[in-house]
Amino acid sequence: MQLRKLIRLYLILLANILFVTPFASAQPPNAGKYSTAQYEVIEKRDQDAPMRDGIKLKIDIFRPKAEGRFPAILQITPYNKNGGATRARKFAAHGFVVVNVDSRGRFESGGEWDPFTPKHKADGYDAVEWVAKQSWCNGNVGMYGLSYMGWTQWWTASQTPPSLKAIVPEVAPPDHFYNCPYQNGILICWMVDWAGSMSGRNPYSRGPGAYGGFSVNREEDYNKLPYINLEKTRNHLQTTWWRKWIEQNTAQGEYWKAISYQTPESYAKINVPSLAITGWFDADYPGAPMNYLAMKKYGGTPASRRPRMVIGPWYHIINTQRVAAGVDFGEEAIIDWDGYVIRWFDFHLKGIKNGVLNDPPVHVFVMGRNKWRTANDWPLPQTQFTKYYLHSAGKANSSSGNGSLSTKPPLDESPDKYVYDPKHPTPSADFKTGHIDGPVDIRKSAERSDVLVYDTPELTEDVEIVGPITARFFASTSAHDTDWMIRIVDVYPDGRALFLGEGVMRARHRDPEKHGAFNPNKLSKLEPNQSCEYTIEFCRATGNLFKRGHRIRIEISSSYFTYYLRNPNSDNDNIGLVTKFQSANQTIFHDSERPSHIVLPVIPIGK
Image (cartoon, rainbow, N blue to C red; front, side, top):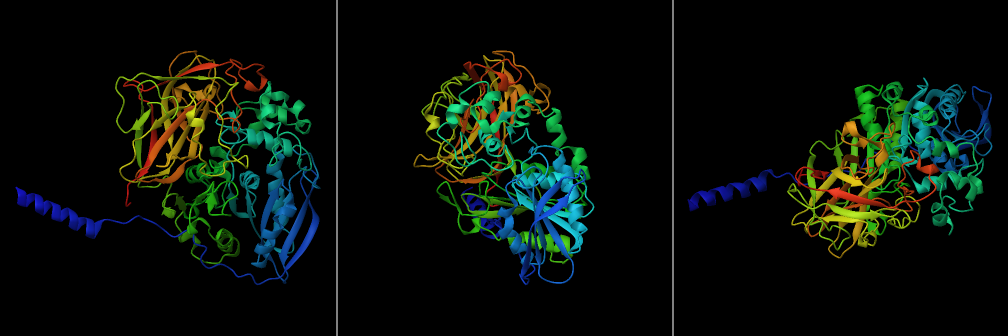
């Protein structure tokens, strides 16, 4: 018997030596070989490009100083076309004509400014075709640009302009109820700040809540009801569109439907390859994976030119530094992104056979390991979606409570309760940029009794989590409406609690027929004190190695202010019109019949 045990042990050790696959790391997105910077650049500023309705958009043109025709790259921006000059010169030196355009109604471009008018779709089509017909263009046009400029690319591509050949939507948001201005039905405060700074032809840099320069009055403004009257406390919010944002509080509103692009019908019209990039902490993170998956399912591009996606350890301004919120992600955190984009356009606009289509379609950075993974799909094919259940003895309130998290289902356990008082909301992390600055230490807010905290024991081995996260839980509220907010946190041995991602939902937007999943088109009133099931897909996935000795933490609250505009807990279908706050008694159930849990995308170690 003893001999058999020894033989078995020997065979196991031998197998480990010979056959265990090490961490499946990969090189960062490799720019490889791309066209050289061989041209001087000619600049022509403040030219006119006519649109179909007679409006003229102001443009800057950067082109190689050489005879002949070149492919063009278009960027349409509301942030001043002058800001894209440095990148335009760089790409022009590599043999592209870059055309930077001020959006309709911004700066010197004609027309009336509205960030979400469907005229932006028509303008995108017209601008592409106008560029393609110029004497310096070979007829092939691509698009690039960050954030709002990612929107303009998807809007344009959904109109199928014949000369558009490829796009590079960088940190592009999805449709407007999934991320901004509404995140799963909840208005984001930084988007209100953005509206203030972007309300006119030229940007505002002063006043309460000015985007990028928050004043001392910002939080005071957000304490006032009704929210629709913010335009009275902020003179520069008097626009033709602010009230539409508030009054049309579902995606079925005509204002939102007209600019939407994330429908099967729209994706089917998009016949160009897309190379998307985002960051784990990007405020507009949901757009990239949503578009990647939807283009695979509905898109009009052939399988050989399927979408590509890169996710790095960055916030909204991607690939500029390796440190975020004090955490150093190492040398691989910065990549030659412009080189990769040039190689992408070399292939799609110049026809250079450079093997870019042979690259893995998915690159993701794993924080903690500080290494990249590559894959043929998203979520990663080796993912083991694992349920982690909420547990407590009825007092999970705060990080000093008795909440716990494990893979063992609950039996008969008392629910957890807290009071959500919108007059004293749970404070959000101190995000310096208004967006999410990285893995910020959020332990302070977890000390409050209106935050439920569930921790695993200290991990005895590393746990790698890479991919989308879903929470399924059972809850009741004494209110007719409320918000649910769930965060995943990496708790270090020294007590730091680093924010990784979150899921949120306005309860009124749950769809009872789909296990309480978010439905941007539907409003479902709550019955006070009735247990309801909720399925919340996290707004931000993560790619993080929880190291041995760390703990995985889940936090639940009903506010996170001032990142999110708080819910007054009213029975009014539109909280933007509510005039007073009401407290709500919240209950989270975790028992054998209502096993509240979170589903984490676990990557087996070594795979």
